[in-house]
Length: 203
View 1 (cartoon, rainbow, N blue to C red):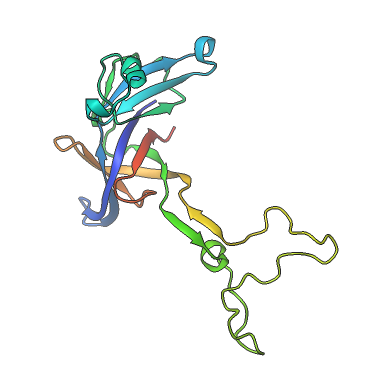
View 2 (view 1 turned 90 degrees about the vertical axis):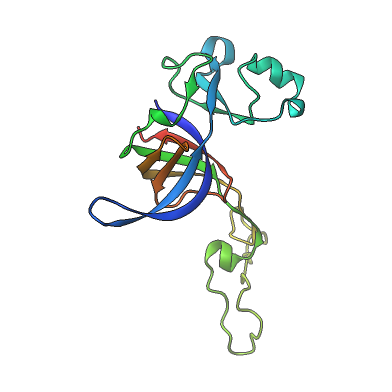
């Protein structure tokens, strides 16, 4: 299993050798170190814990310092469920684990859009503008039934939109810049600029 941690930078266009243009997302790859290898006997499940990024030492509490055991002052931690036999504590992971053309999947937190109505959130077309319905264009309409006299669970309504954990599959690395620790991925990636993304091989 191959994986790295990145930070979303921006989108751009990249031309291939045939002159074809591809929409691409630039990701900054953060330095990562394996901080713990979890197993079923001790932890109840198998996973690889990775510390990524850098943080000022004065902003790190004693528990985190003791856990990382002088491996580094990490910005955060992520876990990956596979690869237990491939890594050991202290291994460094960088952009060199991937190559151009590799198929990957990316997981990140999508943009938060706050409280939104049913037209934006669920694609409702709204009420008609005729026959006295002057301000009903973006209203949800009827939400209950006469018989049960209650609103069913799962009824689509207005509410908080975005800030969801999204996984996008079928992506491909089209360019790698080892000097600047950056990769270019074809297509869009969830989140705003600065969002932490988990990059894994498609398999």
